Length: 363
Image 1 (cartoon, rainbow, N blue to C red):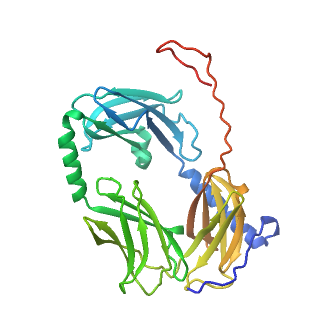
Image 2 (cartoon, rainbow, N blue to C red):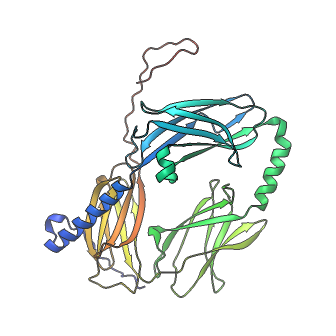
Image 3 (cartoon, helix red, strand yellow):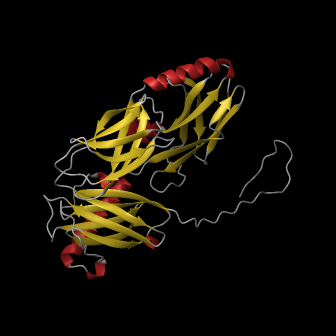
C-alpha cells in the first residue's frame, strides 16, 4: 500500500455536509449509539483491602454493582453473590449480599488450610444468564509460613513448565502494509501468570523486524512496517532460548485503519489508512468519536488522510474512534485514554475524634 506523502485534513461539521452525507453519517452514528446502549449491562467492581495476607489475617472486601456503560452505581439486581475459590474452582466460602441500597462488604479470616493464590468472584443471576463476561474476579495471595518451602518449589516448577500464551493487539484492530504499525502484546502463562521477558518479531526471510520487552504484567509493545508479501512470527525467550510461539495474522487487503499519531492535552492527531483493494481517492469514510454512549466528534473523509481532533471534545477517561465506510461497515476501532486530572474531591467526617471501633461517617 502506498502511503500518501501529503494527507488532506478533512473536518466537516454536519452543518456544511451535503444532504446525502448528513443522512449517512447521522444514520451510522444513530445505529452505533443504539448498539452500544443495547449492549449495556451490569458490572461488578470488587476490591479488597490488600493483595496478600498471612495466617489469621482478615480479608476485607467491598462489592459495587455498576452500570457497564456509565460506571455509575445501579440497583438493577437486588442480590449479589460472592465466592472465595481456590485454583481448582473449589468454593471456600460464599456470601449473599443485598445491594439494593448500595455497595456491600464482607470478610474472611485466613486459616491454616489456605496457601497460595485464591480468587474472589462476584456476580448476579442476570450475569449468569446473559453476560458472564461481566462477572468480577479478583485475586488474593495467602502467605502460609507453614507451607512456604513446598509452595515455592511447586510454584517455580509449575511456572517453568507452563506454556506461554501471547495475545497481539494491532492498532486499530488491523495489520496494514506499507506504513509503520504499532502493536501491543500481552504474554501470560496458561494459568494466567504474567511473563516478563524479551522477544522479537522475525519475517519469513529470517530478518528481525522488531524487538520488545514485557513488564511485570506481561505487557509490552513494538512497531515495524509490515509487507503484504511477507509473514511474521513472534519469538519469546523461554528457558534461556528464543522459541517461535505465535504467528501474526496476515495483511487483509480489504481493511482500513484509524491510528493515533499524537495525543496531547489539546490535540489528537489521527491517521486514516486504506489497503490497496479498497483505496480510491474518493473512497468515503466516516470517523465517529464516542465516549460511553455520547457522540463527541463526527467527520467525513475521502481517501487516506490525517486530521486533528480537539481533545477538549472528549471527557476524561476511555473514549473510542470508529471508522465506517459508506455501507456502514466497521473498518477499524481505536480506544484511547484522556487523563485531565481535573477532579475535585472533598472528604469530610461527621466529627474529628473517634474511639476505637467507632463508626466513621464520610461525606
